[in-house]
Image (tube, rainbow over all chains, first blue to last red; front, side, top):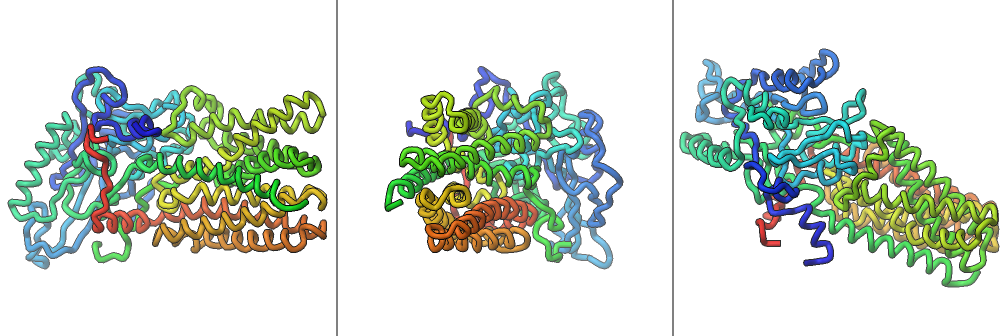
Length: 295
Length: 307
């Protein structure tokens, strides 16, 4: 094993996060499959999440004036976020959820709606960089903040490649989706999945969700929805696959998602090498300045 | 609408900015570098019989690291819980590594300065000076990893060169302190270090920006651009002044040293601000990732068992 083999192992692991974190015989990994082709933008998930997790309001009545979305994105006080995209795109009536009107007989106008959430990454940067151990991997393979340990250093916030976790300023600590860790322990479904009226949010064992998603995307493509794609499903991607993955109907960035995120700690061995060499160079530079040449 | 000029979702940011106060964290990047490099230069001054250079450097190192610790704790959302960082050691967290590093370095820097000032326990003082000099480079360089180990485009994409930029900036800051505080007959190491540090910092920053491509834009735009350009100009001015005037004129040495100290601070605040600007604009997240994917460069991990 290479000198930083242990570090690499802790960063990369074998792709089974609960096992890699030291759980013996953990339950199957749990996750979300959010099928945005079924989302109707009702925001029941946002409400159910707030109710169950006692998440505070997002401040005052701020209207962004951009769309039906006035939350804008995930944050410390928004653990499920429904994005609304109004789109004019030549689709030739291919999609089931298009808005057909007399003025747009070809269905050129559509609304994309998508309920975003913490991805519960296989390789979670927030967890890697947390200096207190407040962020931890649960036996279900999810990533949760221990509120009684977090000291609000905020390092996880810029580390997340999806911009999910954030600091609640008036509280000082960071907050994000727990995938309803307290409900999972009781064998219950997470609140958002329970509340979703269209089954756009599906909760279950990740392996089973992946199979279901593969079938769904194949079905959509077969019916002519050429842009349908899975996002975060691939265990070979830059975060080792997401525990919460999505079926999207357009490029990820249209929904405010990074197109091809990589966990920052993948490059950490290289960073430490650079820092070590730079430190030695500083020592050498100062030695040269001190001992070389005259007084 | 899809034909709107914004990138992504109504032009809203994709990654989040670090919730850190610039005065505290960019200030720490400057002070931590100043302290680390000053400890090394102080040890060199001790070894070559330059007490009037060593003394102010040791005091600066201790003062700078003390202010740093206060700033770091104050920046926490829950300052009373700062000790929670000493309940684990995580090499995957540069902040955890840094906390343990500072826990060893700050007492050494303090003992070195205290022994020098009081004359008490000279053997302990020498050991502490040596210890601080060995830990100092790590204190100066790890902060480059601290910033780079994030999803902030202008920080992460510079991860190979950032530690070199930071040690260069630390060297010019320590050289500046030496030039300001030491008499002319003892400031030779500071003068030479000013030149070495300036060349290293400017070269490393140039390489970094070239490698980053479009993600380097924030370094020359807006507030970050102003700060970075001020840092570059003051670095050249200070290093040039140190070489031209630092040997003959006390006034020239002090002015050059002050310019170098200011240069280091401007550079750190500039890098901090460039990261913020890059996090705010989703283009810096989307475009490099799309380009990488289009170029077929692998983003992923080897399959399980392959490593």
